[in-house]
Image 1 (cartoon, rainbow, N blue to C red):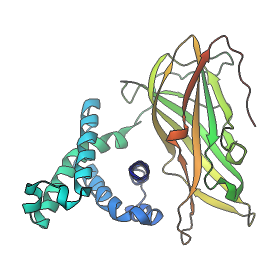
Image 2 (image 1 turned 90 degrees about the vertical axis):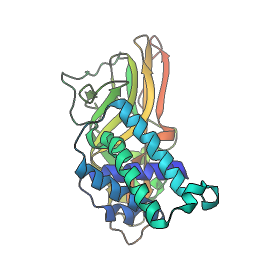
Image 3 (image 1 turned 30 degrees about the vertical axis):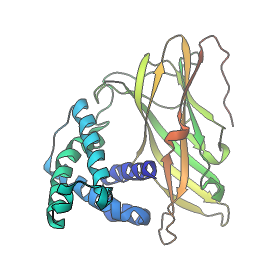
Image 4 (image 1 turned 30 degrees about the horizontal axis):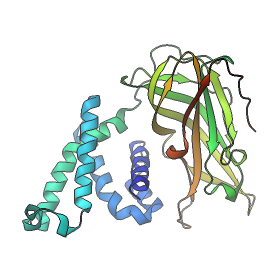
Length: 290
């Protein structure tokens, strides 16, 4: 349940950072609205008050403090310390607000600035003998509602471990549109193969320009909402020159559960089903899967 809330919180942060309103996010997730609203309100206030770029260690420390503060706020009253029980509700609220304003500044700094700029030089080029393969797959959720879901991808970005925001490895896919209805479960489609620098990578973005879905029931095209123009997965993987690393980026279409919304569906990454595997460089290349 906590993992699900964290994913929804991350998605709302991305959407609000790109100009959407808090109300729009709350409307898409009514079951979580009560928990989301104070965190999102604090985020927007903090973004206005703080215009700095925190260090990597500050981001990590702030995130840890943020999680601890949230867990304490959700703890049953009988498990809290006597100090908390003695405080009046107004003092508790004021203290929690101050804590959130301080720690969220560091945590949301990464959300605001990553990636703020692209790589300084030319990116990798496609090569059928390359050490890195990028694939797309679909985790089955609401995909059965559609006869097709066409996702257009303009760019892929990888962030090496310990790098700053201007050291992204970015490349354009050889295949820039995939139909997710053809890729359920274990099926994948290769969209790029080439050589990238060896090392560990911590974050993977895909930049999506368009999503078009056609419903089975009516044959009509419907809007599938994006949480911003890029989708993010934080899942470390290693690349070496003597192996072929295949990274599968799993996407999923989910229903918002709000029949009154004009945008009933959302495209989002599925972290648990995404990741990398490795095989020796001499192994025979695996073909694309329709």
